[in-house]
Structures are given as structure tokens and as C-alpha cells.
Amino acid sequence: MGLNAYFTFAVVKGLGVPWPAALGAVFVSGILFLILTAAGVRRMILEAIPRELYASVAVGIGLFIAFIGFRNAGIVVADPATLVRLGNLRAPATLLALAGLFLTGALMIRRVQGAMLLGIAGTTIAACSRA
Image (cartoon, rainbow, N blue to C red; front, side, top):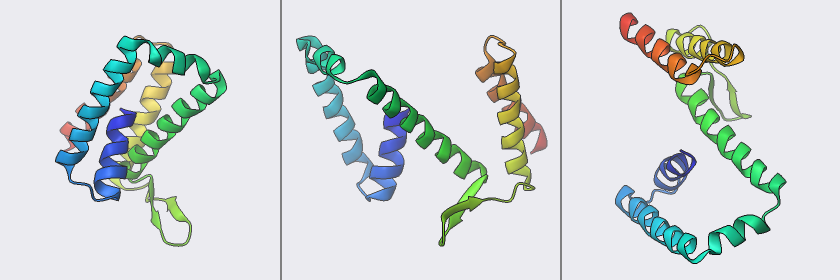
């Protein structure tokens, strides 16, 4: 997901690279990754990276994906003075997104198996029944 979001929002939309060229770069990087894995270089690289740095990169990618979701849901919007600001939390689509987020969080806290999938399905059903 992180690589998909990076190429979609940073490379294609941000830098203006045509999507076929971006997909070609993803293909080439996949081939290189396969070669590095088969040669054992990937394992050596991963073992050389401190666990803290590895975890922080994962957190950064997660925050990037969450930010994109918040922007698409209208929870945060662009602002020229501060870059982002809180969106209109009374908008129906934003309320639905927040309800889905809270539903998913509640299910995860209760340790319900498939909580993420159930939250997505519940939000989707609510959105479809509203339309």
C-alpha cells in the first residue's frame, strides 16, 4: 500500500510523471528486488538497518496513508496559511468516515476477529444505503 500511495500521489500527481512510466518504474524495481532477494543482498541490507529506523519508516508510511484517507474523507482540508486545517465535520461524507473509523477502532479494541474488514464492510453498507 505504501508504494502504491507514494507513486499515485507523489510521483504521478505531484511530479506529473505519466502513469505508464511510473508503472514501468514499479516493474523495474520489482525485478531488481527479486534479484536482490535471490542473491541474499536483501537480507544483508535489512540486518544492517537498526530496528528503530525500520519501525520509524513503517510508521511514516502508515501516517502518509492515514493522511491521504483523512484528506479524501474531508477530515482535513488544504489551507494556504498552515497547509492543512480541520475540515467540515458536519458534512455527511465526513461523518460517515468518522463513524466508520470509530466502529473499526471499537471492534479492534474488543479484539473482534476481522475487525478491520467488518468496519470497512459496515461503512460501505451504510454509504450504499444512504445513496
